[in-house]
Image (tube, rainbow, N blue to C red; front, top):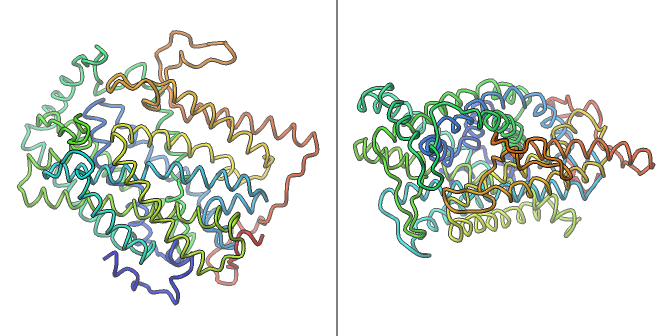
Length: 532
């Protein structure tokens, strides 16, 4: 299907970034719904969220409110982003920033941030795929233990190179249908087999209340505690704000044919949140079923990502377990393709065209994006080969903190240009530096890491020039939320100072009417961002 997609709704010329990287900007409601669902609800989601409940309990449910509030929260900004991008031919969020603030530097920072935040996210899709491969017995040690993953990479790279965004859009339909079937069957069949939900929750609480050998404290609870309620709330809100800042999310939105398509999708996408809530409960089901994670042949440590595949393998007939594994595998290839396309678009438009080849033709842009998508995938594979999967999980949490730093320059800028362009640069630098510093201080006792062990920071580690207002507090908070507040404060203060100093603010290349444009062809005037 991935290879056939190049002939689906065939364009006159696929050698154009609008066609290869955005599917011609003409996906309707159904295709966009499956594309965004396949993009946002990934294979890693289907293995990681249950694994988090398996190991930590109620905290893993943060993903449910986060996806519920995300869609109504971002609907109106996304409509404005779609309109202004359609009018000016913007392909990436950095394109919009370049036009809005007349700042190549700020656009470069947004592009680099998007690429860096996306790389570990792609790697995690491959980690989800490897969990399935490991469960069916492909769990060799050393470099060649990853050989099946290399085969999957070659297939992914080939069909993405040929078909662009059309490939994951078409495959996403099959992926979503399989996932819905598997989860609905699992959530009905497994509780009946294991004694009902009361027995499952009792088993979960009994296991989670046992002291962890690493910390001596209970591993978790089926209810939130006084120390992690703030973390739960800020992680859910911060993740919701970050969701559509990721380049792959923006790519899915910009491929829609109209504002109405986006509105309908924001109303319908919470159906996936219902699926996610059911899926999360499989973490407790795995506890009741006595599931043990498979030991990673490369690292010698248990791989928590294998919880759901092992559960399916042990509780279902072989044929249905195979269907479930196929669903997870396809669920890895769809978002990995979209993410690599989005990162390639950023490289091509905001680095290659802006700094290396200003006069690049549309054909040269498309060719550069195709090559960049291959490089991004190679980087993701190297993440998996060279880094412990548990460390890659932490990298993804760090990626969320990183992408949140683009919120003032991208999301807020859709409504106002009040911030000075250099103030946004200063805010980005301050927020990013403090966020990385705070993440560096977080240990992970369960795997012995002293730094970058997660995204939850105890309040007693927060100090301001030596003043520690929450000294001794064990209440935790999401680092991304804290770093974003500093980013905004610095941007506000710097704006006042720069205006007082008379520093030029650049020209806004967008007009108020651009943010309300519809799909009427006459309103569409694609133009290269560099030319503005």
